[in-house]
Image (cartoon, rainbow, N blue to C red):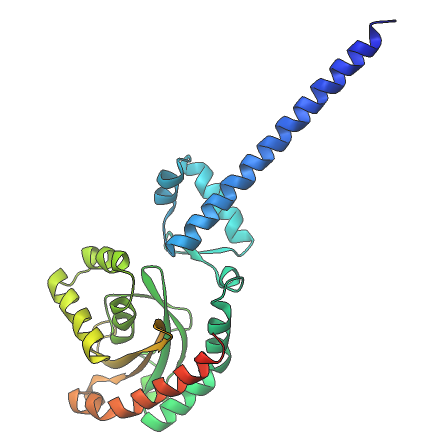
Length: 262
């Protein structure tokens, strides 16, 4: 009988050890999930293989965590690439800007299209892609209009190249390396965009569609691109030149509004 308390203490000690082990396992799972989430948030765009290699995790484990993060709407997946979700962005300082663009975008673009007679587009950069955040297209441009939240390549189209021109150097290098355009030609066009403040494209992303775009810059940061687009037969070089003052005025209006919320 004298030894029983010792056995009880031993059993309690073992139980505490098992509980501590379970807690450690849970902590490890939590840490892994947070590491993956942090990597996606910091990178802006990545894939499962890159995450697995970076974090030294099995690929199957990485996919499992990404699936959970998608279920909680913390990351989004486009063609095997993972990006921070809009919900995750809403927890950061960028939420006010994005929310404002979403709130006023349609009305703002509708007015701009009414004044210009052309399709108007707001696009933002998400990692190595652009995303059409809002657009308004006259009926005659319906066949060339983007879809809301359509993911677009950064190296093709005026609005997308504006965003690429002001992206971090690592993003520019990665996009240029994978682009179908000759690298030096693409880099030269980005330098021209930064110098002139405008990008003009002809049938680059949509056949028969031309576009003129400007960056929207607040406190030194490019928040989005603002683009006017239309069918090439009514959007040639002369038309693009004539629309520059109107687009510049619209960009300034949007920059003033954004400077109050970000």
